[in-house]
Image (cartoon, rainbow, N blue to C red; front, side, top):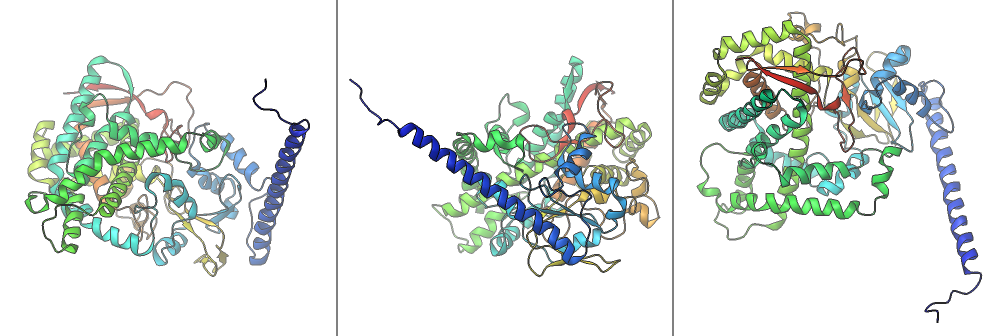
Amino acid sequence: MALLQIPAGVYPRALNAIGLLVLLYLARGVVLLYRRRTRFRALAAKHGYELLPNHSIIFGDLITVGKLMAKCPSDVHGQIVPHLLAQAFPELAKAGLFYVDTWPFTDPMIAVFHPDMMAQFCQEDSRPKHGHVVREFFPFTEGKDLVTSEGMQWKQWRAVFNPGFSTQNIMSLVPSFVEEILLFSKHLGKIAETGETVQMEPQATKAVFDVICRASIGTSLGTQTSADSPLLNALKQNIAWLIPEFGPGQWAKILHPLRTLAIRRNNSVMHQILQPLLEAHCLEHDRTGGPMTAVNLAVRGYMKSQGDTALEKVDPVFLDTAVEHIKMFLFAGIDTTASTVSFAYFFLYSHPDALAEIRREHDSVFGSTVSQAAELISRTPTLLNKLPYTLAVIKEVLRLCPPFGTARAGGPGFFLTNPETRQRFPTDGFLLFSCSHALQRHPAYWPDPDAFKPERWLSDEPESLGRRRNVWRPFELGPRACIGQELAMVELKLILVLTLREFDIKPMYKDGAGKLFGFQAYQAAPPGEVSSHINGGLPVRIEKRL
């Protein structure tokens, strides 16, 4: 006997209904596409600016962008697109920006690479973060972080964490950073003994992760010495679930039925690890001595707001929000610093004169041994300020390979103005992309822009120094510049000082591997990542020198 009888004719009617819904959805998509494309053209006609050649009513600029990307290695990161456009269309690039229409894969965008026009929406009028950024990171932090929050929420929490990331405070934490970098050096020594080829970036990621934990929560989580790190694993897994754009490569994640559940599980793991550490800081704040971490100082501000009295229980809202901020600090820090130090190793090995010069500088300041350098730095952290060539190397690496560019929201009545031509460009409905990569390789501001030349930062010529305002912005400029930039610069100096003289770190890209801008190392978009990383994780062979 049948448990359920479905009347005849139901299946055909159901299929017809589904088919009709699909057709209606497709029709809606076609109408929306047509409106988007025609608005894009109408704005250009109204305000007198040029679009990219061959803008299509169907494909927008997808074909133009696709052709340029097809000439690059297949894994190249999308943040280089404005630079490719500037090279391909130099006359249009004189406007200082491009209107780029790749909807529905990305929001309609104004890619800006004129330094003074970038300043207009990052410094002079710090525009809100674009909704795409908020949507991308909401599953990760629910908007409780310095990257995506706005208004008083952002202002209050930026003020809470600013003291912990100040130059003075970071310097006070240097001895604890040295301990972590020495573990990294020891790990590289073990790899050298095997003679194996390994990826450098994952090794550096663990060291950077432990340093950021020291700076933020005052605790070493032992990531470098443990076979497994639940916190780092949960962090990386959640990063892999984020949706940076809506291209075909993201569709599997978007449609995955377990995505939300996986993100919640990983967020729970991170909370279970971080929340007790933060709560202990709150309950023992009056007994905390020695250098202050970002959390120590944040807790101090919180306790003052509570009357600076002993608490038996900490406000769960404060704890929850602080955890979300720490998660974002960890994400932003490991993604940028580990990749940057990998690029530094690559460029230095590819330029033997620069490598010899930076080693000479380290010998002159710290003596000939790494152990002596570690001891001197721990005792006198300000010695790190006496490394002009090392700083020049780091700044040159960040010029060639800036980690990110900010995405802000345009608005009605907000126009960008080219300072040379005085032409005004509407921004309402557009994502404003601050293209640090295109700017920092622009020949109008940087002689020989694709060359690795640390000496340009030591020259007396203003153009070589990058002294022109607004042209060097790997951490962005303005009130929403990266809060952790001082920490990143100190980390990079420490890693180079404590490893370059002890090891030869030789890139091992295969013969015939793809190149970009003349080098085998370039900014790639590996699966499971949202920001740019060095391609292939920088395969290296490590040899001991001392």
